[in-house]
Image 1 (cartoon, one colour):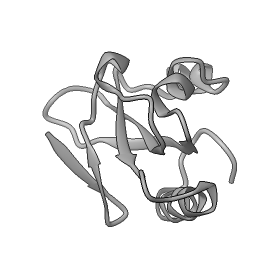
Image 2 (cartoon, one colour; image 1 turned 180 degrees about the vertical axis):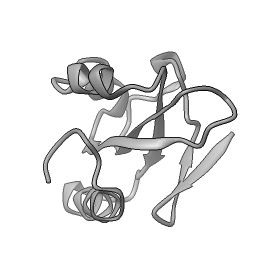
Image 3 (cartoon, helix red, strand yellow; image 1 turned 90 degrees about the vertical axis):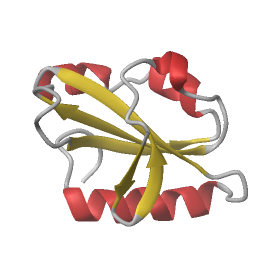
Image 4 (cartoon, one colour; image 1 turned 180 degrees about the horizontal axis):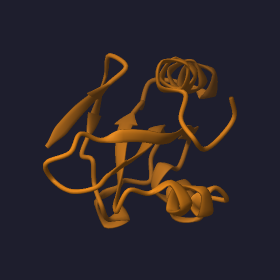
Length: 104
């Protein structure tokens, strides 16, 4: 399963963190009401340990408050990028979708 977010290929969206890997990347938190509805971007961020970051995220409460019923995470793994490169991707996604959670 895959999805494209702001021109970047991502895996998922996965509704369980069991499907995430703890390696560097950009994560997009998505929501939708049911399988017939398109995903909406709630948040985006970057981490060198993506799975751990999503599982312990300080903005998880915001995700729950804005959830339409189903939450998913779409990881874009970046094994060849340092933090600056991940931040660039994060900012491009944030600028395109203006998510409800996170920095603006």
